[in-house]
Length: 122
Length: 122
DNA sequence: TCTATATTTCGCCAATCATCGAAATATGAA
DNA sequence: TTCATATTTCGATGATTGGCGAAATATAGA
Image 1 (cartoon, chains in turn purple, orange, cyan, green):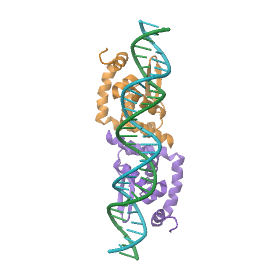
Image 2: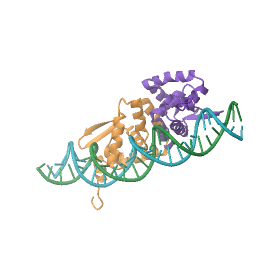
Image 3: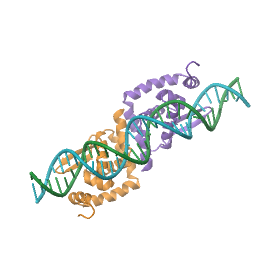
Image 4: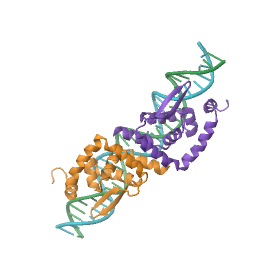
């Protein structure tokens, strides 16, 4: 039962749900998820670690970036699929959808660099 | 999304999962759930409150006892149904199954009274 | 090599949570 | 009414959680 509870705990935070739901369309690098969630990089990293240790997502390193995607064979994948159907009907996910379009439209490199701008620089 | 997260949070505790899973076979009074979970009455009561405010269970008062059952039209009922399929395969739920048989075999009244025995009495 | 960038790890803090025991509430039975 | 019983509420406590910033790590490019 431990692994089931780990999955449910991983799913029971709104920001983790947002990240997971965003990944259903394809992989995203951490910077893009930071831009989506508008949280500190360390916070996003922690959320991703929790999702990954529940085996809901996987990561892939490519150059400077780490791309996350939904696990191919994730535990309780049917549960997650039904959960996505529920999330689809929320205003929060509709808002994220729009924000995601913006994120997709920008080159990853420029989006990432913008995140690290100190005031007065860049 | 708030209500979805409330449901997921309610589901992400092992003792609440045990209670919910036990109720799939029919209603149980609080005493029986206390006997099943082996937690303090106040703790069980709080768990039931959490499950009820997520609308996963309902209660019904009958005399001295309060009976809990799964909500007829619970939110995310398909998710819960799939979750039950997962739980069915765990050793924890198999153990609870046996314990439940014991609980069913005993008259509610004697089972409840036994819970309040102070050492030296009864 | 050195530097900028991308991500994670660490340490901290405030908020929430699971648990308990004690007290309060409600109900049936004597 | 009084007493025993069934359940909830309250208050306290230790553990976990979500958040941040700073420091550490890793990598690409100059």
